[in-house]
Image (cartoon, rainbow, N blue to C red):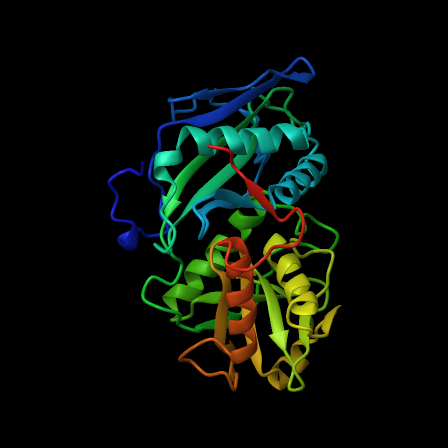
Length: 341
């Protein structure tokens, strides 16, 4: 039984749901964890997360499939990425099996918020972990909380797909050999000024180039790039300061094994971008956002796919992956994690 919600008019915004999961780390171990109705976090003014931004997070979704099952998409990869993020920030790792169990508990406890199949809406899940205790000297916390809440969200393209316009940023998202390859709050904080400045100047997002030379394509503030060549190959940038997107990884597999396309994961020079025929941004929220134009100061790159709709190849990738997620297309083994009601 679903909540009485106008699923077709949901935006991508927070709606408080009934239960969330919390586990506390203290004295070198995680407690057993529990569900709670309390959405409030009480921490000391000197908590490490407030002083030194010691926090990591993930994002994934639960769906209702065509045959009525409730599933999540590759939660094991989210668990592994959060583990890597935590290690990089000197935080305790939350075990993979417990991560997946927390996902299951939260979805089951909020099953009435899982949107029906065909609505275009999904249940967004946000696992996160942060330094909990008071730290005034620069050092890691000794106590942590892992939490996971959920919120129903509408389709990313509520009024249909509209290709977006990017601006090449003069500022950097990450430092060479820094933390760009982990999902930490500090990386997203670094992109906020450039994002808002882009909006104030009429652009939808930023394209960040590599911080060392400013000659190679990296990512936007929250999504990886996919390009399509004139001869139909898929090209995606490779760099150790790019966050490894689970959606991008899945799209690469779909391109190769479902659509029979050649994929190149390599360094991509910005000077090459004008020669591609399609461009898309991939991430959990939209799966793929088509890009129609990129502006670099006085230079404009307009993709042949145009400003009206997704390009043909990117549309095929989008349709195939969302078909797998929604149960319309058979999934590779292990991709779909069913939540037993």
